[in-house]
Length: 418
Image (tube, rainbow, N blue to C red; front, top):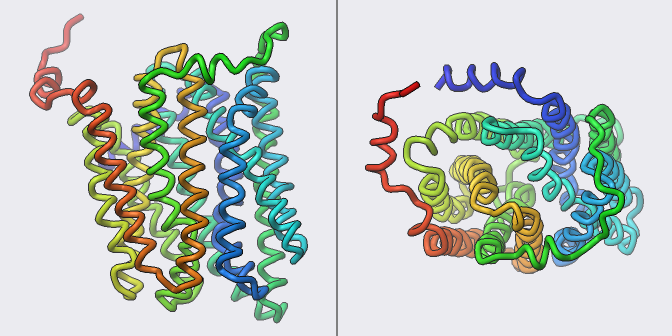
């Protein structure tokens, strides 16, 4: 295990310079995301707004993200990955800031919608960007990007968990305390654009016309299958993650610091899973690894809210989230390898669109469940969604793409030849 982790860090220096800069940008923006996620829901509730309205706010961003995913892809093709990512990070920071600058409900909803309009670009551009600057090290690049995301998101969650009580002792105004912390988090998001300024200029074809062809004519049977599965992936995650801080504070009746500590501890299994993921995938196959992870996640989603014991819920969440991230990194890599050159952009876009639709629907339903204090149902519906993820992944890809274990063992045992 230690040798695997050490090898990963050694391999970073061999990555393309542009990948290293992208990893740095990922660190900065996800630190901001982590802080924002820890405090935003509680900021809304601290102003006396209803959980139903919180659900509406949380659904607007993914709905907008689903609508804008293809236009963002157009933009990336027209002006290049570098300029697109810089624009995405700056607008994201400003949009998040719009959500917290005023208690005006319309402004909060506008900010949420603005977030969604550009947020999808981070994912859609990520797949072709990493693919462009990697070769044999593609799996490791995807894995380290996911690790940077989870690591800094967790650090942000830790800061977001502890800073409110510290600052509120001085400010003596809960809402204002949250607003200040959330404003600082948006600065980290905007700063993600700085490393991207030093990425090599990509030169898109200026004569190329914007066309729906890569996204519509590029759709093949696998694109549709990936998109359908990703709908339930988004829903399964969102029923838990969108309301996690509310679950901890109002269902488990623990402090926000407990939530922040949980997010920090999450780094350990997440890192371990992500580091050993490619090794496990080589041993038993990528698709089989994804299927096992999704099967286990089904049970863990329910375990999170099965009891009001915060420790049992926290451990279940940590395992659920780390398994989820681990399987998603392999899932994205699998999607890239299975997709044809013609369908790769379409697959990337529709993965994001259906994932966000699932997230949006879960936020709307979840807000109503929270308003009725039906916390257990969040876990039940999430578990059902994960069951569908597992089943559909196996049905769509199991027979064609899952390599038999005997064949993998023969390949591993085969002697090396010059």
